[in-house]
Structure formats: structure tokens, C-alpha cells
Image (cartoon, rainbow, N blue to C red; front, side):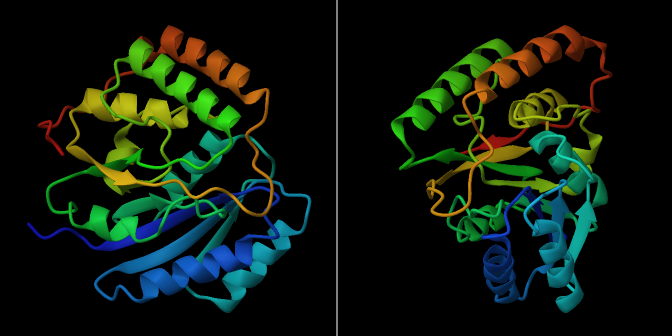
Length: 245
């Protein structure tokens, strides 16, 4: 069976006025060269205060491939992602944040798995971020992989290419940064066909990350809540599990 080669790029933004226009142009130019794929770029704007909302509207007005959803308030990374998943019009969804945290060429590697997989996730091969960020990431990965018995190498590695019907079948509820772990947990539990590819990290050079000192505590709170409530959720329909390397 030939995979439906259409992809919605989901770009969640909050106060990214310095990066948004260049990021949209870069992603649009990249996918515009891949003529085998139909695509749209969906900006999910979450109550920005720096002019990002108006800029997003102008970008959409000047480019028919760009759409904007205004969430109205900053409700968290997971909330913006879930909104994007719900509004995507293409067969696949691809998260790309405005700081472009990985080489876009990773898409080509992932697209090679579109015939046999429902999801392509990533693990980090290089991480130039500050030592504090790397330590927090390592602790987070070790904790959630152990507690949730996740098989993925990097729980919060940014690159993910997912079938839209798969992600919509998963009972995702997280509004915050636990969304990555929750996605992998339900994907694994559903028996979805998935693989991992190596993708390096590109450090942000402009704008400001929304990950702060309080983020680990917020994620820990989300994890505790998820552990208490996950078994009350009806599991997604099981698929034949396939994992390739």
C-alpha cells in the first residue's frame, strides 16, 4: 500500500516574533522542494504578547499553505500540540518549533519509513545545549522511561513524524511538557508500528525558550497525575506492533 504523502507541519508559538517569519519561510521552502508531498503549515499561537499573533495572521494572509489557530491564552506546550493534532488536515503531522531544533533533512529519513510505520520518532546523536539543560533532560528521560516502561531512547527528542489517524486515536490529555512521554506511552500501549531515527539537536540562537527552572517540578506534577489517572482511560485499539531500527 502506498502511503498518503501529505503532511501538516504543526508550529506552536508563544512570543516568537523574532523567529516566526524566518522559520515559516525555511520550512515552506524545504517542503516546497519535495514535490512528492502535499503540505500545510499550521501555526498554533497561544496568547502571545509580543506581536506574534499579528505576524502569524500576516504570514497566513500572504501564503495559502499557512493556517493560523489562535488558542487565546498560554495553556502549555501539550495543549497547543493537541489543538494542532485535532485541526490537521493531512495524513501525517510533523512538529517543528520556531527555533528549528533539528536539521529539517531528518524529514527525508523519516519519510522513507512512511510505508511501514505509523510513527517515526527520534533519538539525539549530538546535544550542544548548556550542561544544565542536558542534565535536566537526562534525569527526565531516565525517570519517565523507568516509571512508564517506555522503549524509546529519547523521550523528549524533538523530531516526530506521526500518522494523523494514530495520534487522534490516542487519549492524550497533557497540557504541558509531559505530552511527549504520554504520546509514547499510549503509542506503545496501542501497538502502533514505529521506528526511531538519529537526529542531532540544534541549539536555539534567538528568541527565548519557555523551558525554565520551574519546568521540572511542573512535569513531575503532571507525571504523578498521569500515573493516578491513566488506567481509568479506555486503551486505544491495539495494532500489530512493529518496531524497526
